[in-house]
Amino acid sequence: MMKHKHNLTGLILKINRSMVVGASFVAVILLGAFLLMLPITHNSNEWLSFADALFTATSATCVVGLAVVDTGTYFNLLGQLIIIILIQIGGVGVMTLTTMILMGMGRSMSLKEKLLLQETMSVDGPAGVIDLAKRMVLYTFCIEMFFGTLLAVHFYFSANLGLQGVYFGYWHAVSAFCNAGFDLFGGFQSLTAFRGDYFVNICIIILITLGGLGFAVEGDILKKRCWSRLRLHSKVVLSSYCILSLGGALIIWIFESYNPLTLGSLPESQQFLAALFQSVTTRTAGFNTIDISLLNRDTLLFMMFLMFVGGAPASTAGGIKVTTFAVIIMAAVALLRGKKDVVIFRRRISEEIIHKSSGIFILCLLWLGLAFFLILTFDAGKNHFGFIMCELFSAFGTVGLGVGITPHWDTASKLVLIITMFIGRIGILTFIMSFLEKKPSNLKYPMEDMFIG
Image 1 (cartoon, one colour):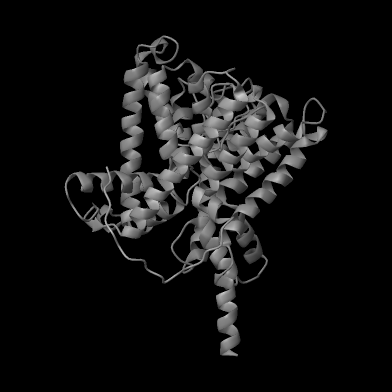
Image 2 (cartoon, one colour):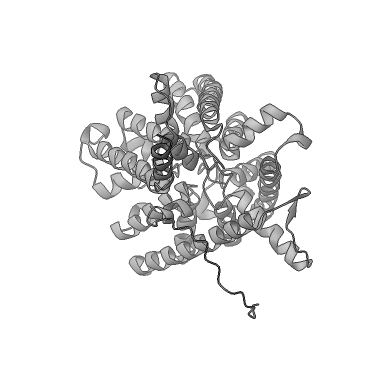
């Protein structure tokens, strides 16, 4: 009996969990694409092409926000509800929601299911993964309901949208917390009509930040309630978020304050608010209060950097993640200072984490380079390469900020963006490991030095 149990455990551990996680997202995307193709989900009552339906479903499930058709005008109520359900599933995670549903029906979790849940939540081990999943779902719905109510009341009275404002309030609260960036205001205008509305801006900024920090960080804050007692992961995420968000707002304000097409035309009291909103939303949310296509080129390049970094692990955000970026920066600092160890907040970082961070960084750059080359080839010089790069970084970072060229691309270019959005959501390591079998080896080769740099 013990031997049989040992063999079963070994078999479970050999399962390619990355493939299951990726396949779960693919299944949801394909189902969503099929539903969004149907004429009953559109105001035009016509079939949507499979390429556009697949793009929309991928963008929603991977919480990106890039759109090839206007969500607010093209889709009817049923289509909009399908999109927001896809956003919610993609934000919380397919495996997490499935687990909670099964447990609600009275079913216990097997070791295999715990390992799959561990993979999709990006945690170290299966211990405590069920409690974390419960807190994730509870936090998500409590936060969305609270801010959804605030926005609903505001849209109902202050924006004079009536009952439609109530619907808009809850819909956009889910979209913002999941860092999706989809909106229903029509004309691809996002939140530009509310650039001077402090209440809407602050609510959306808080929702984006809470969604991008990660459930592990939020749980750690609620439990420890003291900076010195927080885990290293939480300290790195919080400090990186503050530096990038506030520093990004300052840089965007400096670059754009004299641009009459963006911040320059706004009152001084609204300029930094718009810059802060754009800095936060660039971290993978996708809403905008200024026209992205009118930004200066240096601002656009800086925003691509923010898109590339993204948010925190185990969150609704994409990108390489702030922790990966922090480890790479501190490793470079240690190298320049001649230090052997990489230290962050008086804690030494393991070589495994450093190697993994470097690998993620290099693999992401390689994919972005390949994708950029492919889209340039398919585009055949129709669009400026800077705009193409912006759309690509936006897709990888699951940001959704676009300059308006995606709807006009051909099917091949959209397919490249679809794959990029998928990689950005599940992570490039999970994507690659879906096609590879892990083969651990104890074989060690002789060591020899070589010249580098």
